[in-house]
Length: 153
Image (cartoon, rainbow, N blue to C red; front, side, top):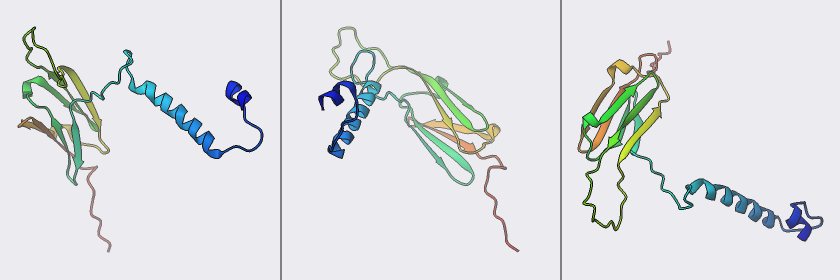
């Protein structure tokens, strides 16, 4: 057993199969532990902004994005035949320099989100609007991507 631990060689004879599973689990945990830590060694949050929902019906894709406090002038939206890009800058009014934060979860800065769609859209017919902090983008499907009803006859 000592030789196996020192040189990672297989052990001869009988041993529990659960010991090997435990070893593999520990290796995977160590692998992902490094993935979730930043350079400072602290646990980092996901930092994905803005949150996005994408839905689809027979005529269009609909993208809804949470952008509280943002105006249409602060956003840049572009669409291609199969993707949508949303970018902008979130600005938060600065606090007084003597303010002591107890919790700070809202961050400011530039963001960019790219969404790859599963089908083709018509970029010339894309519509967008923002109301109550929710950006809604309607991406009409191209005629070739719409399902067709075929009659059997």
